[in-house]
Length: 544
Image (cartoon, rainbow, N blue to C red; front, top):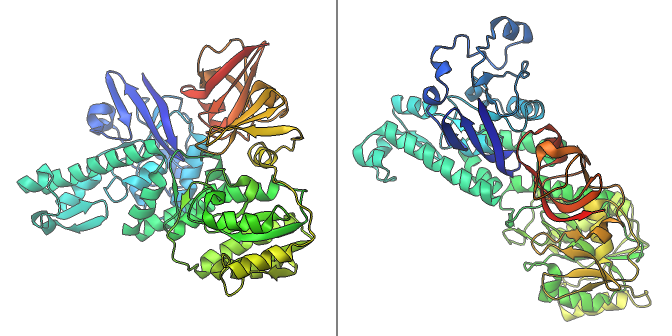
């Protein structure tokens, strides 16, 4: 009898507890496969090639009934919650990036979310981060032992000649004793520990962007996975607890960026202004806290809709500047945008201008952002006005020109609450009479004396009170049956969940005679398919 409970997630990666008989493991983990799964010592026909066709797999696949249970791209049924699934020959997938990404999508979509996944003879210090990031939990030392037998020295940044053990680049016990096999094992175990620590912090993506540089196939795997936008979006949190570090070209393809911009295009709308001013970003976040944006806001004076053009996000309306990752990203500031970067950002801005028509669009930009605005305006078929003189948006002359360009335009105030609700919940509500109270990050939204929402200082998202949820009918609901929550709600207690729910979303739990507010700890898909784990972290419960 085995159990597996996911305790923490970071995209496809999981930190969990796997128990079989009297063995309990924190995953991701490096195991002695025969000690954990004795049946493997005598199991026949267990290395069926991943590219084998259905007929071959059906003829040669033999299941002993013991764990780990073998799965294959054409045979992935028969796995229950708590089981360990073994995907033999997975090391061969690492040389086929497109198939790797396709198979990962297939396995994660078909296997129970609370089944452990074992990749035998595959893990090296240089690919361990990718394996964990793509959903694997259990590993062994077979691959590193083989490299030692071949006289190779394994590190997280690549594989080198065995003579490197004498170069004093590592001080592990294996290197101190001249034992190449022990060094390789130590390097793998150390890398898995690092991966697990970053997984818990929500920083695994940054690690795999750096680690994949050791192997072209790993770069290919990351790019093919990023291209599976719908699949990756369902399996990614709505916000992370740590800064969004966009330091490589692959950062432009992160699901958080695509989700942010897709919601800006499809959910966010504004009808207060018919004039738009495109502004450059700032190093300080939120932008409005920066000295440059204080000058911009003084020049605009509420007479136009302020929209920030930035890399890597693309388009950030002023109302949404607090929302993750708009207020949380960090990029290397060089003043240069390459052509691929500009192409992606031009696409974001073009779609924004097409879906949000304005009577006038004024560009107060410089450098690459200015070129992006020009290209987007041409593609969207609009006339672009420019107000920055000599590519110096913050100069007194440029600010005066921007101020004069808006002469006669009507002054309005941005609707931060309404814009955030549109982006977060996909609904438009009447925010008339609502006011934001409080200083610093702990701000709350009231109508009269009644509190409706509070801002989450870590994500910029709104946390509705029960009265706030009354303004948001039918969305982000989780249904339960037959009990009143006494604490957090576990996955087995979930009867239904809005498909839009992602990990980190605010949700309203509804049941017979009871309502609860809280935060989703897994996506709606995982809530419905899991048998273990916390589904909703409950904040308040109210009997109706």
